[in-house]
Length: 461
View (tube, one colour):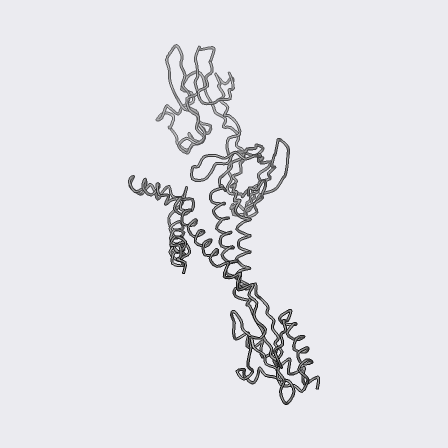
């Protein structure tokens, strides 16, 4: 007797499958309860440096992309493959097995309900029984032995492949999931209205990915309810490939669009400066100059041989709106001060603030008065971009898995035998059968077959 390979036996073990399934379930629960990827930031901040470093190394905060989760899935896949390889030869033998038509030897062992007595001769009764058996089970095999005629038919032999089909479906689903986890990506795009980009910022700080096409935001539409809550925000997008417009589509919340195998979702919106702020210089109510400014730039006030340098530009300094910090260098000395775009509203809300905080006085360098006009703001759309190349394979695997479950639970291999033998009163007919599952259903079908033979015989008399 050949000894089993211990390594093969280990990987084909049901115990191994159970342990792996428990481990994968526990890992999935862990990945659900513990914040993952970007969401893990606040949780990590509450841990000590030692624990956070250790947990990050073992990828607790990115469970579904971790090496150990992939190893568990690979081991389960190997377990299923080895089990299937062991199962397939036996399944194939059962599928190909030819039952002897004359396996049924005696009518005496049958219940009375499965025996029909007819006055017809044996050959004519066999033809009628063959016709009925073909209707429910397909081709009939016939064999004669002495005064007996044996009929045999079967259906549903493919049901033996139900479990291997389920294994195949699970393996295909697992392969699709792993392809999606390690070949797909998920990230964000911020596109100002009227501009385009091909860069996706990947989640969890994984860097950037450049798409093989560009996405342009032609228009962003924001509608509100009467109470001021957002009702609809929509991005009208155009996808550009090789510099040409390939497709236009509107993306709304819960209505994504797909292009180039990448799915785009509406995730956020906002406004951003549309250009640089403008600084106006007035001397004794006469405009001296108007300058579009940027950080670190400088310009000269010729009459006083003064150089003005832009030190900082803020969109919202201390919640008081846009502001710019200037440094003025002149023969009389140097000074620094802030120029706010909303200085009049600031002074009205805080009387005496310019005396208390001279740094906020836009007339600090007399006789000049500086004023700031903030850059116009324009809307931008925030899109979530995701690519999961494993989705078609997961869908295929789910279909295969469903087919396997249907075969296992709703189909069975049913075998039928009919024995006809000559008796004093004519011909006695016995009906018997076996099923790979659902014996109760098989018994009902045998009763119906016996009733049908009996009814046909009575109708013919």
